[in-house]
Length: 62
Image (cartoon, rainbow, N blue to C red; front, top):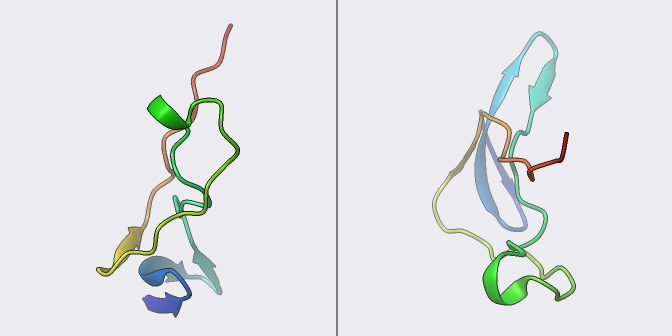
């Protein structure tokens, strides 16, 4: 299923009465130069964003 929203078009999983929007970024990466800065808005994209899997998670200690 394709769906449009303010940042661009996204492809999502749909079925069984529910739609899943997985891995859609809500802020820019905080790696590198952005390490100790406040979160920055995500940049919109021009191609379809395939939202069919979870995004990477931050490493955690034991």
